[in-house]
Length: 580
Image 1 (cartoon, rainbow, N blue to C red):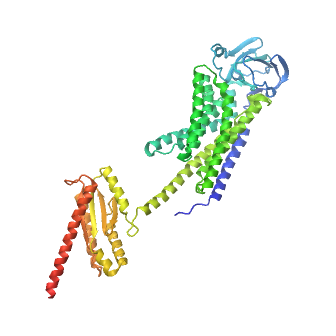
Image 2 (spheres, rainbow, N blue to C red):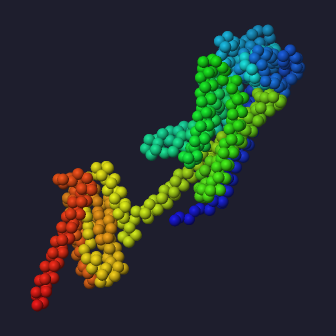
Image 3 (cartoon, rainbow, N blue to C red):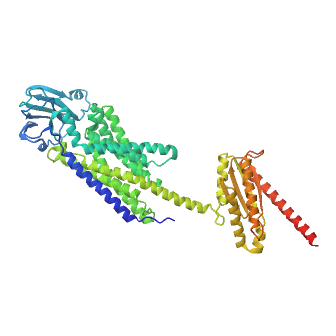
């Protein structure tokens, strides 16, 4: 049996590589978030803000925490625009489930969201690019916001000034890491999903690849949609909002199904129940939203609590299962690291999710700037880390499967191999004959019997008889190299099965057998090699199955053996008379 690789050194090397990747992601995330395009002006400071009738002078938007707003709350912000004008200038303003009206001086230049309020539908969250009129320099920009949902937001995003191209490039540059990770996760997810369907079609593989792909795909979609990046290529903001919430709500069910897929079949039931429960909740919320009976965004706190509760539960279940396995002595081989890598990546992802949910909740209620300044940097890093663990798991898992299959084949070979001759034993021959019958396999069966084995055992001992059988097997192997089955049926009986019913090919092998026997007998002073055989093809009259062919081949073999016996007896009688 192959020696198991040393796990500790390999695991340590893998862990170091993953930690370096993780550290690099965190560093890049920090740098990417502070990047800004030179031609874009951030209007962050010196705002006059009116919050629920309270006047706040000379405020920075990053310091304003509105607490979770209530439906109908209004907010007024004003800021003096720079005196130096920009060609094609516009302001970038983000609203979260709110209507917006924008003034330059006393003139209304933009308004949006009232149509959703009138229809009693969810007002989407998105970025507005609001063109400024000529001569805006030095005038007052006033933004009027009205919350259309309870708890819609608790902070106000920075307002940026520039032309549309510069604003878009600046935002994409700041979120370049998020964009790359999101696209990477989506591409990886699609590759895994399509790979699963291809492999399932031909090999009926496990569903762990499918759930891994779905999880990676949903994570990528959620990261991109949360940061509103799809809006740069798609102006349909309502579907983007629904997709953002739908991916978030579907994640618990896919995570639970994924964890169940890497468990043994007998341990999957609780995971399946949880996955169906989570899926039912997600589908119910989406249906109610489509029917306009509730707005999907109002369910986010509930989903956050569900994710946190199930994260603790899944971790506890995993630890309990491992302790029980170790207690019963069922722990897996230490060199199988695929599951260790996968669970490490998953737990890192769960930890990052919990950190970001905690940060979001803190910023929403207590942090300066409110939830407008919350981000998914930790989830992004954790998702990338998890994607790397998925790739490593994929390769290690298949390496381990090849190793396990090799061991299984060797053990199967030992169980189905005749130890004396190295040929298939009777059990393997019976198994193959049954398979040939099921497949209606056209073939030629040769039943072979070794004459005089009993005589050799009686006069020279069983060791000599064993050598005689081993030499016989060697001859049969050389003469029937094209056979699909060569085996020892027991004692002095052998079988060869050749594909097809060609008499020319069979006669050629029989001729080789006769030549080999003659050559062997010339070099041997001991008992000469004599074999009896019977040859039958499945296309002969009266032969329906391979079993029928074997029975007829046995009959012909015994007829030849009887002929050999008679011939030997006549020869001995003739020699006796000659001596007399």
